[in-house]
Figure (cartoon, protein in one colour):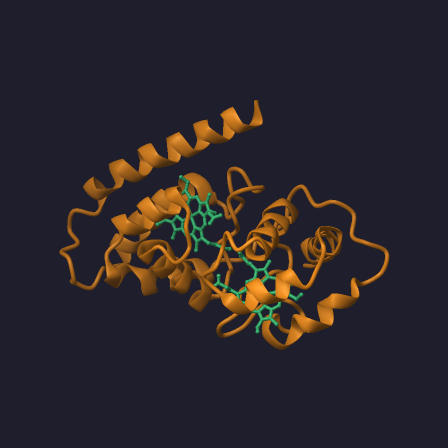
Amino acid sequence: MLSRCVSTIIAAGFAAVLAAPAQAQGTQPGAQPTPADIEAKAQMCAACHGANGTPLDPKTMPNIWGQQPYYILTQLVHYRNGMRENPVMASIAKTLQQSDLRPLAAYFAAKPWPAASNTPAAPAETPKGLTMCTPCHQANFQGGISWPRVAGLNYDYMVAAMRSFANEERTNNMDMVKIMKLFSDSERDAMARYLAALK
Ligand code: HEC
Ligand code: HEC
């Protein structure tokens, strides 16, 4: 039932994406996009990532509002070049022009971070492995110049992202692969609960 619902959402998102080139006709390959071009392209992202920053299916579609700009940029590059494999995001990222990527990343990074949904209870104690994360994700887990924000990321998305690094299904960052292999499923689960509950 849920998976059928998600496929419907994805199909609807795809339809929006396929319709999008008509809105963005003004952009020539290589030309600098105008703010109106970026706004039009951002509309197609809203089909899944949400018109108010809350994704349509938060368990599988991550927050991009308020995410770190360099991280948004690198993920779009990785979806385009196959370093991060996801059929939906790969086809969407390939509809963009290279010159759209930075302005789109800046556009979403400037938005407010949305409140997390479906957040389970945080563990009573801070999972001890988390001290290892702060040199990169920062003490408040809001990320930084080359590290994503993970505070308040959806629990289901986050636990799946951690597992996919540990299983080497997601290999676009080998530091994260090595780090996630150090922890068991239940340790990663505790970290994801703790981080999802952060503001
Ligand atoms: C059809 C639904 C859909 C549309 C439309 C869509 N996305 Fe996504 N997006 C996803 C899904 C699903 C994921 C998670 C994929 C994965 O697990 O790798 C994702 C992941 C991402 C990520 C990685 C975020 C993270 O925390 O790792 C970025 C950045 C992103 N999308 C940007 C965009 C932008 C920009 C657009 C518009 C140009 C867009 N997306 C349009 C479904 C969509
Ligand atoms: C050496 C720096 C570094 C350390 C230490 C580190 N991370 Fe990361 N982490 C990154 C980078 C860089 C990315 C983005 C990777 C990419 O490009 O996909 C990332 C991605 C993630 C993501 C995926 C975010 C998303 O939106 O998909 C999660 C979740 C995460 N880290 C959790 C952790 C946790 C929990 C720890 C500590 C146990 C940790 N990280 C330690 C650098 C680090």
